[in-house]
Amino acid sequence: MATKLNIKAIAGTAVVLLLAGFAVADARDTDTSGRARAALTVMAPAAAGGGWDLVARETQQALRKNKIVSTIQVSNAPGAGGTIGLSQLARMNGKPDIMMVTGTVMLGGIARGSEFSLEDSTPIARLAEDFEVIAVSADSPYQTLDDFLTAWKADPGGIPIGGGSAGGIDHLVAGEMAQAIGMDGSQLKYTPHSGGGQLTISLLSSAAGTVNVGISGFNDFRDMIEAGNIRPLAVVAPERLPGVDIPTMIELGYPEVDLVNWRGLVGAPGISEADRADLIAIVTEMVETPEWKAAVERNRWKENFLAGEEFTTFINEEQESISALLKELGLA
Image 1 (tube, helix red, strand yellow):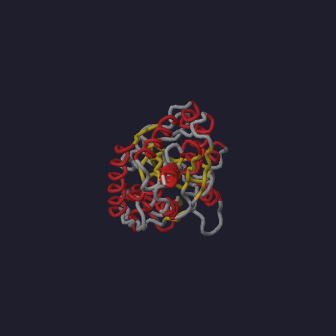
Image 2 (cartoon, rainbow, N blue to C red):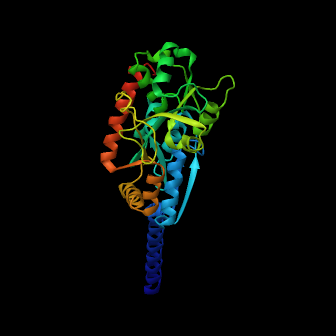
Image 3 (spheres, rainbow, N blue to C red):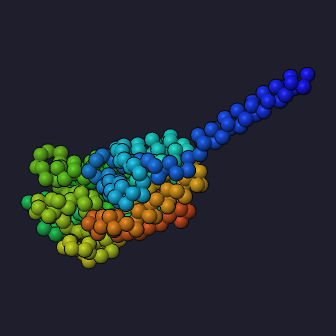
């Protein structure tokens, strides 16, 4: 009888231990801490070659070179002012090993009626500011910004302006310029392009349907400016870009044209506080690396780091501001 009881006791203990083992295994399966350090994806919500893609690839290079993350890849999800990428991220609830590049352009896309907003993400950090340039082809009759603005005011519909997504920062800068010279935003003939490469091709072409004036980030035009194929008329920045001879809108008498395109990173919605802290730590380490410092200098960005809840507050304030500006300019 004693033997039978011992056998039952041993069997019962084995079951308890087995169940405990399953519980530990389940806990390990749901523990996501450290996953971003092992393998991380940075999504650029635009086509390869544009400003968001540049930020993603500079991030990849700095993280890889300094072994902050073991494996890192960049993915592209272009379209609709970044909101297609945002819609993909919003469906990755709880995924701790992805970040998406965001910025002013996306706020415009959201304001124009996106199903999702940045509330459907987890803000990680603002990285830097990127500056807009108003440019024409080298053979354009517009030698200066005032040449262009005078002609534009006289014939708004006859001078198409090219830039990125409708409602994005390029479109907003065009709206601010129109407002500065007394034009109604509804008179603005704006042609959106999927990226800086397409805009440059259009600007340099004389074919029907192309644009006379382009607005985009400096880096989208940089190679063509240096080659002498594109003439920059002005840069929307508080001061001239280092090593670049382009007058600012302030110098030229238009301080009200002042939108800056900030660049930042957000994570998936629903991640744990520990995973968010890990992503913030990864980015904080990255911005201190020599590779990231060199990227900021090379791309004429202005570093403007802000992380965590302060970044969340900044995003909310920026969204309100951009939404109001779109309505004021008649662009939404």
